[in-house]
Length: 405
Image (cartoon, rainbow, N blue to C red; front, side):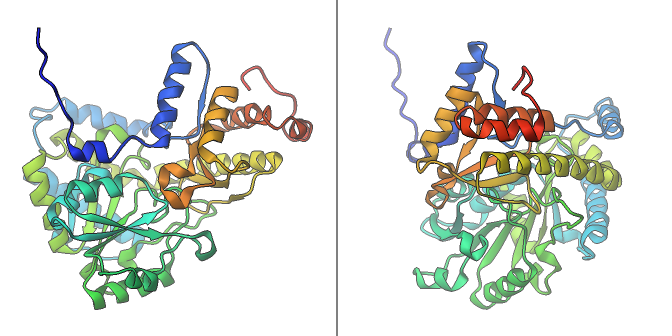
């Protein structure tokens, strides 16, 4: 029987799977063979949602019409609760038309690209960064312009250099706290950025997905705390890492009304948006924020401190995060991709190679704080087998290895 030949689109062939995707497939094969692995590569929340909020979700699911698209009254209730929370969290008043419910941050970036980018438009994309930014721009027909972020500049972009590279971009994509380096947002930089973007008519999209993970009682600031920012920027917020529901695809966008309209109009053409039960439950989640946030950050602080202790015993050089969910580590071997593959095969520990986040990430490793302190200790012990000369010092720090390590 003849089979139809299927050729995938050029866009799928252009955006090949990343080095991290290759490692994840290798990890899956190891697990299928019965080998135990510890995943510090992906930021997949392992904490469970607040019990009170789970009860609210369960109650909303039982209501008639729970699975239809979110209704106008429910969306309006969500907006009101989100506005009130934004005012408490950032001391910024947001107008109703300046805030929209979204199906998560990733979808919002794609919808913004499809709604604002014309074929051939230039969009500035930071490097290192999460790869889907480039993909979203290409899918919309735009041209991603690399915006290098350097350690020497604390991973903040050089706007003067961006101007010297050629035509100014229509849009500047940013992500603070930064994935993969966990650099927190900087008020002085935001102030300069808003002034620069308004003067040059450049739209700013700020992905704030990791903004509610922070340490040392220093919550990251919103770009919208800067005067004039709502005339130039949209900020994207996520429920995934605050309330531990990445699969529910919930978030909201706040800022420039016309940019938000592009999200709404594109979303209405390409998707139905969150279901009724999810939007109703999301509106209730804001009332639990203080308790949830405090519990989250107590746990993430414990994980950060144990990770730092382990990396110290390994002798690895790293940035100690003040916010965000990652450690950005200088690779102890020049080839970060080869090292992460060797670590996975020899120790069963998955780390993300810096090269997966663009050329500027080469020579680094990203470690995610999505495992408990015991698993982090076990992962470091496993990795120490590749550096046995440090094992004695490690045992002095944490005691003898247990069977899981």
